[in-house]
Length: 214
Image 1 (tube, helix red, strand yellow):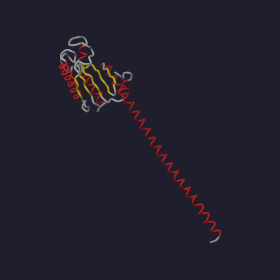
Image 2 (cartoon, rainbow, N blue to C red):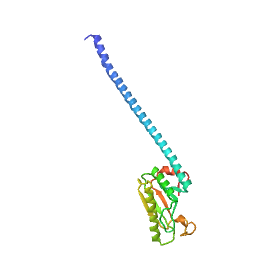
Image 3 (cartoon, rainbow, N blue to C red):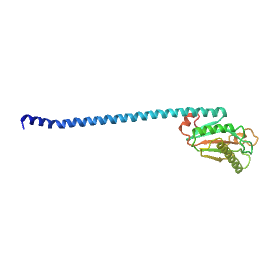
Image 4 (spheres, rainbow, N blue to C red):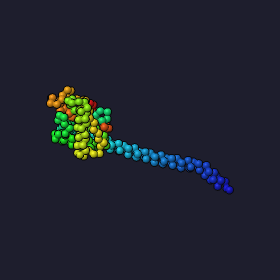
């Protein structure tokens, strides 16, 4: 082997590790760049999804606020958020010793069914029935339950069929006008039903604005 050839071989042998190191660094840089691009893409996708979700929530809250305000202004409903549930105290009242739904109450029930079905299609809805203090305690509980069941049947006939529905009679408890019975002034307010939508979520409280607690 000539001296010149030997020097060339020695130089190649010395350069090999350097070339390998350069190749390795290049590969690592490429991998880092690829990983960074993938991460940036994932972050961007997450941000876009979050913005879309926020926009959807804002749209939902605005629409819900409009419908709840409509129930309050058109029918005098008193709506409150309590521990994740929504309560609707609407003037759905009954005649003395009667569980028949009046013609005046039907438009309110139809509007409630529309709102509940639109925003809370899977939430459990409880219809709470009440009576004035005339009659025995046991009779008033039975009468108030009959009122709640009649309202529940009406809601189902009005299209509120996907929700789990319950009817409960509370008799003469939680009187709006204490002591008012039969033909007394304010007695009709005691003969009523109240609606409770469970698991209404935080959006309901936001939509209600200042009227968030009972």
